[in-house]
Length: 145
Image 1 (tube, one colour):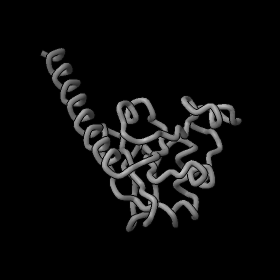
Image 2 (cartoon, helix red, strand yellow; image 1 turned 30 degrees about the vertical axis):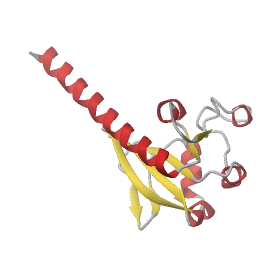
Image 3 (cartoon, helix red, strand yellow; image 1 turned 90 degrees about the vertical axis):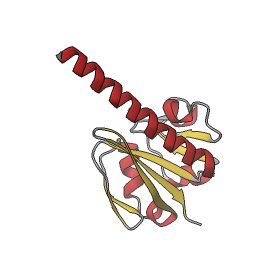
Image 4 (cartoon, helix red, strand yellow; image 1 turned 60 degrees about the vertical axis):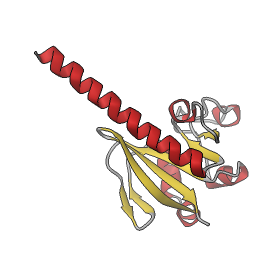
């Protein structure tokens, strides 16, 4: 019985992730041209927008920078140079949002650096928080109009 329950729970989690991922992809496909994010493979697969890989796995210019995976120095100036209009950050806990600004999150170092940058906060606004799985949330930011 325990095995059946675990399999059912795993199936529920997979369906929940699939639904959340589809919802997020629809939002990005509808509004974005260039999206900066760490989860390039999952979200960018079949996307209508161009990804800017903050981790550097699929972007050689970022990938050759010093630092570990997901800890490369990527700045707001890099986002502006690539004409990024949306950013997707992940948080390993429920993020705190005040108004349209992230006030607390638990992401990778590159995500934390961008989220805490005062200029980034001035130029990008939080438009959605999408719970993806237990302890995993996506925070969607759009360039202010």
